[in-house]
Length: 327
Image (tube, rainbow, N blue to C red; front, side, top):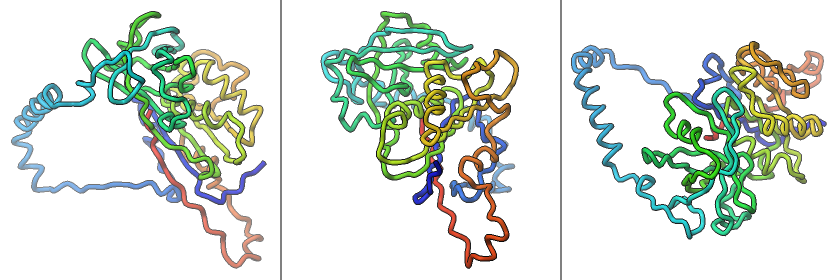
């Protein structure tokens, strides 16, 4: 089934810190991504170079002073164990599940007491939302997106990557079943409108797939009277870094059963490593590039010359919007 594009297609992107997948990819003009440029002032560069060590030193001192002494509301937010979950305070949760699922990733399930949950049909639980998790040791918080939202028992499942210099990620990887973790939220990441888009293309890398999997759980996999078509292009560094079966198997099986609703395309930087499971779509080796995006958005289709002979004018191309959805 082909969906006729009568409204603007939507292109969503989300990457982790493992690198920009579009480093050498220029999007076509039809995507209308805003660009910025700045030309340096030639005379100012030579004059500033003499003072650069002092400027750097002052910047470091100012940055450290701002971090430790600026009255950040999130660092001073209280921990309340008897008030419903809210962005204004931290709520204790318990680790109920902990499983290593990759070279530097793990699945972590947290449970918030059900009586502390807001109503699950409340607007705060938008199709894509996140919570802030606090590292109690150094009082630093980072946002994480629950893969499947939250259920009536207060369970939230996270796919978390451990970075060499990531404080909270390393701290979470050290937690065991029964440990207490404080979080605050939910915070709305992106508001979905059911009848606004005819086609949505999602591009992710690594654990950046989490907001799109949450959209899959809350919108894509559920029956709908609208015929929006979704496509997910996902990139991993190696075959071992492909999302765990709890994520990728659900996406793959749904795409096989509902090709008119959802398409899945995998990309892997390196072909070396574990073999790809036979039930998953064969990945393309290399980064997500311009041809893959153009194919999904039907930008590389050309009208045959004999069709143009009988047409007075070409149909106007639809505008595209490029939106970066944070994890």
